[in-house]
Length: 226
Image (cartoon, rainbow, N blue to C red; front, side, top):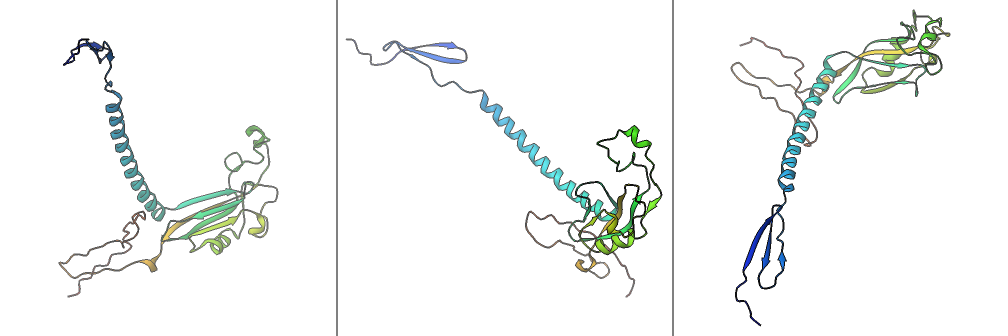
């Protein structure tokens, strides 16, 4: 039997893969086909990394923007008397406390505009015919809200007549609306100063990497003393 000292092969191109035939063994050998999927997966991975990095950057920017909005602008929170669990919750960011600007427990607008009565039973058209007092307000609205929430970071108020004393309009469903600010804690401020023609360096304290920090300038005083 003739033995081959060197295998001779013929190559045939078929569907982007090379099939090799051996003259000696008359067997077909199919090498591993090169995958076209790998470059596509790499491209998707790069795109995903870029998108995730942009998402984290956006989230970081949104955090600071939301923080500044809370400590600069007035905030309004409302809760209906018929809502579940029937509480109004107020929460301020860290390093701030609640400063009540105004509060109203009662009703100033019709039920069709805010806190509808029995909305699951009656249609909006039927609610129009309901007689209700739209000039109703508890006299203790502001005082009670200040007592419970002023200078706290988190507070909750029960939206119920017994929380505000006498019911100002028994036959009308009521709601509580509170206007407040989240005021920075002045006792947590740090002071820095410098002489003329010198610079001041402001830096947040070193903390955990997951804790975001922001510099808020509360007051600047310039004197011309020699």
